[in-house]
Length: 227
View 1 (tube, rainbow, N blue to C red):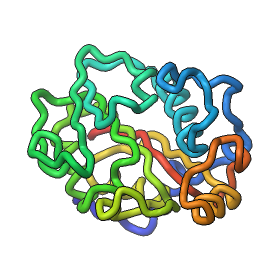
View 2 (view 1 turned 90 degrees about the vertical axis):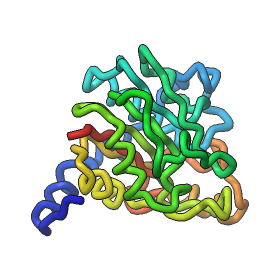
View 3 (view 1 turned 180 degrees about the vertical axis):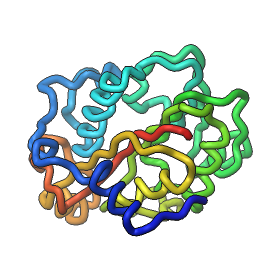
């Protein structure tokens, strides 16, 4: 595992994690672009909506909408709508499925992937370092990985709910394990955070407003590249 100086940490923060004022002023498209979500944001958790917006933009920005071998952990992830993969391999990691072929701590892929997507998953693994290392072992050099995680959330799927991650912590987790950070994103506001703890559930994207407050992060996400 790689270690970092304070200067290197500050560089990662300033270049990859710290977002511009323009980023926090961006709203969602009028219509959701995901067929899996029936082209509608209605009824969806706000941070996941903004995550989809960033993911789609990043694929287009870096021209990585196509891959040969995609590994992923959920058939329902709307991110899958924007990736054209020649082959797909599902690792159905959840609280009822920890066999050797799906456990992200230990799985061995049939072939190395050039893209791996595992959203809303790192909070449910007992050893995130080991998971990132193992995913890296099963990826081709130059392949991309994308994940989103909660920063502030209510307990769910207990007892398989172990961690939340700050944007900087998520970035360092990947940087420490032979990944180059390409982009990070985040979304949250105080109304959303108050809502989830008051109601012990997640609101519709239109219930708590779209304003993205830098210091009230609810979820964050990352696109990284295998070195």
